[in-house]
Image (cartoon, rainbow, N blue to C red; front, side):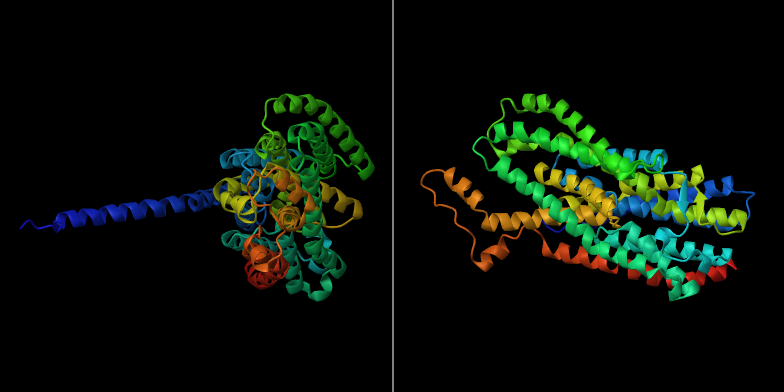
Length: 497
């Protein structure tokens, strides 16, 4: 009888094959951390070469490495909000989104990122309380390390958090450790805490309102294509107006100061011009399209590509300071031996922030992009359009009211708003029920309102687990970064002294 068992040599070869496969999988997972480590080392070496003769050279090199690490984490976490909806709606591929975001983030940081930043983030700490150079540099180092670690942890668990709030918490914790609770401007901190609620609520409400408009005047009409020809150019004009004003207020504020009325006039002019340009284009695009929702998605795809690019540019111009602000402050203080309330940003420091954000996005961004774009709720181009438009409009409203808001909270809040609105609309909209039943094939049962709680729970369109995880991460970002920074401060101050 033939022995059916494998020879020993075959078993050994199988083991080698399994080991090679496991080693290959492990090595692929280590590519991104390896490239990130190389980038951090190169930034440190570049700082060493650039600042070789400067006082405090060792401290500056260490700060450059930490600043690079912070920039990588901002790219991995924060930038996902700009391109996640467009990717989730399949208006663009992940690779296209990564390239667009990386290019425009870098452009925004280098072109419009400004050359001066405040050394005390958001004015939450009294500068006089940390006027000693060694104390100040230790506080900035602790703030950088703690905020970077917290963002890294949030990215690992899949929670998009505010990098601005992370650095604010880091500065607050180090300031308390250095000078006590009296050093904190608690009025400013209370307004920042209020933004935890204001940002996502505003973003969600505005996104839901636009989605309601689209459903009422385009989707649930008898002639969808005719409605789209009338309203899609208007909606694109509104988006162009919002982004025109948004970039005038935020994206270019480091280059030229523009007040709110002027920004709104710029936005209105851009919006009218966009409507005039796209009206004939939409008419041509819509010719021959079938009267169904799938056809409408084509008309909203191109605006989403532009919105992702513009959001990335504005984000690079604004949030690069989160990475390079403390680093620039450390460089200035180490060189001059004195603490200043505002400092200039050397070009090499700006480059660390700009390219660090881009590398972080390319290496680690896909995880959070998929979370924002696909895992919270299902997005299509119309819903993603509402999210992107909400982000720009909410920032404009908040700027006009003088409210501090987080772009992360706005974008994710808008995604939640779209999802929760869809749940309610699916359950209760009479217009939807009338339209669906009117176009129901003959012989099929009429659709009725959902009244059973079990049925409502089954049809939930927002994943509650993600909702609770993200909200919890938002709530604890500032205190978590503050506690971590406070502990690190005592380590840093002993090392610097």
